[in-house]
Image 1 (cartoon, rainbow, N blue to C red):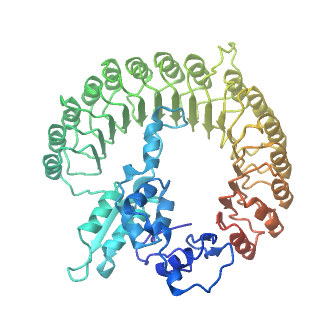
Image 2 (image 1 turned 120 degrees about the vertical axis):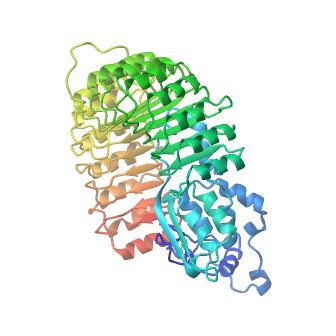
Image 3 (image 1 turned 180 degrees about the vertical axis):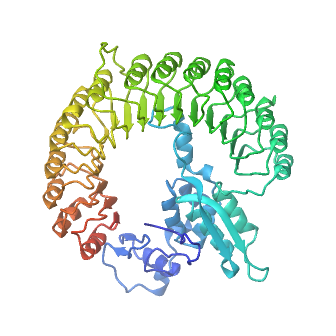
Length: 612
């Protein structure tokens, strides 16, 4: 896959292809507008049309048109690059492009803005609930002559899409170290996850005194930062909108309360994780958090039921839209209902490992939280099937996600079902072994407007159990994930194609080992808008690939045959035919396909990322 720097931090810049000289690459790209050249990392440059070598030296040295663009235009283009991998590829083009990329802060990329703008839209997970790309997992060390501004710039761009930079060590004497303010500035802009464990309250006070316009502050694993530093920030930084404090043992109630109780507080996003705060801090949040829209609380072992109850009943969190609570034993049925009543605009709720929340508590919460749209439960093992059905029957949820909730048992309910939940569009039930045939049928009867279903890891469901759910989806399914559903057969996929093939866009059957070529024949016959298909580790052969290639109406963009030993070199022609639209092809662990065949594929499908 494309990479800018070696993860160990020791390799020189990778040029991305056989043209290591940027001047040569520029000449090649400028030969003709009809010459199509693509030069991703680890692939040779491909030339899609013949060209003459008879140009004069002046013509060959003509500057590529993209370099004529001013930096302002390139800056706007780079801001719209979607992910870290693509940015790394762009940084390989030239030092100039690398320098421009290091001048862009993480929050300035359009992809980051889109996530923030979509906070009110219905989705499986919430902005603050979803895992972030840069959590600070990587460590880099630059020593001696290798410690240069250019390497720091490469680290800043290259680590952003691979876990984020958490630790950085620069070693070298004054004569050998080539690091200046430029390199350190690139790290500061591109690596917001970099940890500074030696910073104390004195440093935080200095930040408050010299940065009165500070709007965002993240503090993690800083054992020397205490209440004094946070009190200074609360007093001296009236524009602070985002605060994240995690695993700081000296931070207590006085520090947290000073941040929120300030008369000028405009804090809208608050994360408090692994702190020694008590009920007092949550009472302050509930009373003074009038601007808070997103709140994350995790690992608060000293906060009791009373703290969460007071936070809800204080009536100050009227603007709260998203709430995520993880591993807090103070969250009970009683406190959860109080939160639902007090946070009248709450739309997105995530509970993780809250072991004292039961099905009855969830139903009471759903009844009181009138604006709730998205509910996510992970490892809440007291939640039952009756609780889930009760939630769906008592609120206008648009999205429901259940992950590893072991208390759900597949039993028949004696009471008749309530009125249907026509608002639910997305249902995700992952790795909940007790959720089986009966539960699926109940949900299917209650939720006829589903458009997205994710049942990955439900090993116990069968064709007969899934069929009623598919039959009751009146709106037409768009995305279906059945990965790891080992007992499903071609029969249910044929039914899925017959009922929803005209609307289906994404289908994941990874690990459904009883799925055969008949499934791909049904896809070819029924699907029109399908763009992403994963049949990894299924019983697929060359015949199935051939059937897909003959479906002229299909425009597949991502296709995965990983672990399909029945797909052999004979599929080369069929894969080439589908290559007109493919941008991603996964052939990992396809042991019957030779390396030579993959090379031929790369030559033909040079626009496509091929994993092998």
